Length: 518
Image (cartoon, rainbow, N blue to C red; front, side, top):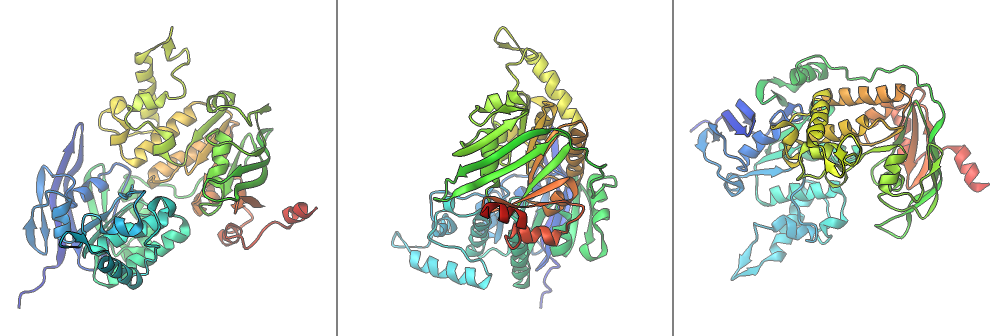
């Protein structure tokens, strides 16, 4: 009897080159059957590129891929599917106006005499969802379900195609802490069933919790593979970044000064349902302080930020910035009044993806005298400015200032936005999920910069779903639950457990409740 090969997938000496950059430089990765194998690396280290090679989206310049010990050629995703390889991409590949069921069977439809066999497909999907605990409403439209549910749809898509090798590209970047916990359980369940999982991440906690082995990439090169049980977060972070990284924010006491942003009785309608998304919220953000709005995703934080930044209108209430009423001001007027904004959705509100990096760097400033003369843009000045920011914030891209924003890795797109907003040097920075999708080295850098801004007398309003970030970066925590602020906490005097109870709505400040009754 022939012995089964040790590895179900082997990527041997893979090299992939893009204009101006060697994304993968002689990388070898070996996946065992039934294991969860994490692929760790900084933003732009080449993780997604390597997985896209395995999934047939890119062709490598050099190297071979073996499945079950035999060499295979993967020219496109259909070849990958035929080899039972599936992939959940960082930005999901779903059709918004189709139902969940239609998205799952799209491209793998079962037909009889040219007619779609939806009944059989529904039965198969139902069985899979029950077997793996992936409960979703098959008739709901994609545009109406949460991001966490959309991810389950992507996983069901892979299982429906009988995939044995499952690639997860940054699967937790857009999930809430609760959804992340559920995903970890789903992944463990899949590996118990004998599925082999490749899991791209740069969140060390998740890797320590769920993976069996970790392979580390740095700047396109392979650094090594370790057993998760035999390593530490500190060891992994220095393999990944090439130096020791501070995993905890170091900062002095805050010295809050005058109020920069004052919000009084703000109410914002919801686009999804009849209730208001933000209900009569009042708070103040002071200069020299990092005020954090914490909460589970979907409790009105997004709508609150939209109202503050001018992306949506409030139905009542008042917003004052540096003593000036900006409740009805346009986005540019708010910007000129002293507000910079690191948005939650970098593709929708942060960048013009088909513009170059340098054009994106001056989006709100191109009309200033520094960048234009008599109505003509001074391109040399724009280039100089962009080069300065790229260097200061270590924004990595294939062709520097002229790289199209779309072609950069998600983490480097984020760094470009953070660079632009911090450098505008305005009294208020609204930072929404500023480190979403960033690696430990970049998170450490951005946290330091936000603390520096605070110490320089800026008011920082941080909106974050990451409990660790909330606890370590903020000076004052306001918890939002169902559109209301239910508690004000001091990070030095509270615990993650207590914060979690406020976020889940199980606790609220009595003083506020009494005020509401008065």
